[in-house]
Length: 116
Image 1 (cartoon, rainbow, N blue to C red):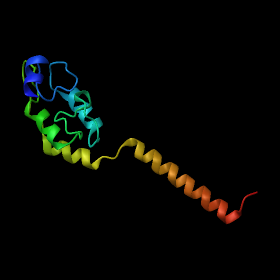
Image 2 (cartoon, rainbow, N blue to C red; image 1 turned 180 degrees about the horizontal axis):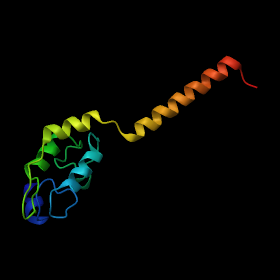
Image 3 (spheres, rainbow, N blue to C red; image 1 turned 30 degrees about the vertical axis):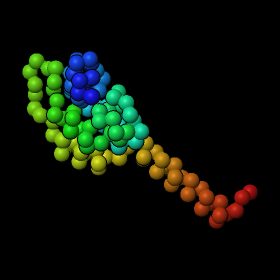
Image 4 (tube, helix red, strand yellow; image 1 turned 90 degrees about the horizontal axis):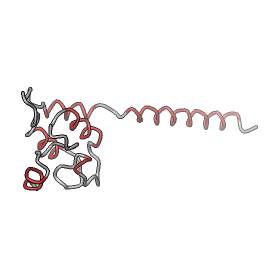
């Protein structure tokens, strides 16, 4: 896999969008696909090819963080990233929760008052 990535693609593990730089754009794709099963695509941040976007993929990205930049910045804080991803719910979760609550309230009202 390394020969394919470095020789043929001319980049390193972690360059998800293949723009030659490993940066926040690649990290954003990984965050969006985090814990996704069945990804099996480099463009979906499955860098290991194991079908799961997870810590092993993040380690590859972090190992090459800021590859392709003229002046590399601070290393990626993997632990902080994992903690933030694990504790921040998806925005869609709140919508589903609100719809579920509304549905339960409507069902309770129908049971209480009957249908008309």
